Image 1 (cartoon, rainbow, N blue to C red):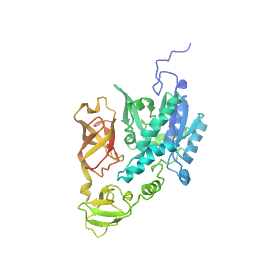
Image 2: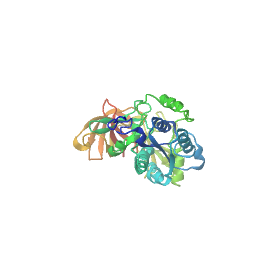
Image 3: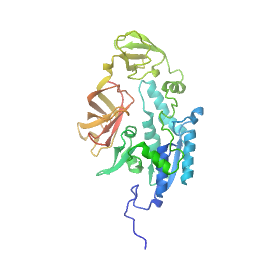
Image 4: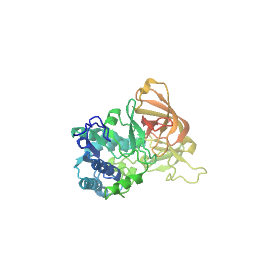
Amino acid sequence: MALDRTNELNSLGFAKPVSETRVVVAMSGGVDSSVVAAELAREGYDVVGVTLQLYDHGAALAKKGACCAGVDIHDARRVAEEMGFPHYVLDYENIFRDAVIDEFADSYLAGATPVPCIRCNERVKFKDLLETARDLEADCMATGHYIQRKLGESGPELHMAADHVRDQSYFLFSTTPDQLAYLRFPLGHLASKDETRKLALSHGLQIADKPDSQDICFVPDGNYASVIEKLRPGAAEPGEIVDVDGNVLGQHNGVIHYTIGQRRGLGIGGLADPLYVVQLDVDKGHVIVGPKSLLATRIVPVREINWLGDVAFDARDTWDISVKVRSTKPPVEAVLRPLSATEAEVELLVAEEGVSPGQACVFYETAGSRVLGGGWIWRGY
């Protein structure tokens, strides 16, 4: 006689057999999402692989180290064939351009340093693709992101990955509670990327040694300025390099070629102390330079806040938290002061250098792994 297992949860958290649990896997063509799909298929889940074609830059399609184009679509399709589950490619080029690339170009032209990967997750993968997964009657959608989803007293929580080197929480702070309820991140508990590659080898996947993506997918060689010039012809207007007092020190060939904190490539010689880009004045066409000390800031204005805490964001006057103001550094202690439901001022206990408008400021529990949300840095102080 068959046992009643209706009350037992499977590994994805559903009270039904794995064979009756449909999961859409967002497959970029890389090792991580391929392993997620292969593992779930081996466990017996009803896996459907979906790859988004996000852009088409001709020769860039064959570039290694990008995602969601040419060779990567082929790799995702091959994994699906090897593991025996259906795979679909959806043309999202227009959506991606409207939701991500155009804003990236406009933000960069305005002197900000945007993070398009966050907008892609927020507006494309976790919005349109997630809705596609629902249309396919999937119980959930799984991705290869290195981040953890844990069940807390108030529902699903977002936590940093076990491997803090691979942690991608900075890029996923805008995940909403509703999205978090539907998403699964099967790799978040792994101790290292080596474990992921070993899993790929255990499945016999040919992409086990495929290099990780390094650049923004539509910036194939890391040259932001050249992409901006193609997207916005005539954007690279020449101007002056000035110090903080307005004294002209040199000429530049376009503000878009500079970022906050930049030291090299200024073309200013003969000075006793090194100078850094401390501000970009797009309206005047000025690249403003100064000593390194001017890059340090403690006050960070943030807006478009997505809050994942259990208590309402503006229910308190202050929050003692940790924050990341860039993806490559560990969280630092800060005080969060809500100004409204979507705006706040973050005071860093220790000043950080190179805080730039357009970057994200992500909130974490102090001395914990939980992601409490985050927002966008929108002007300098």
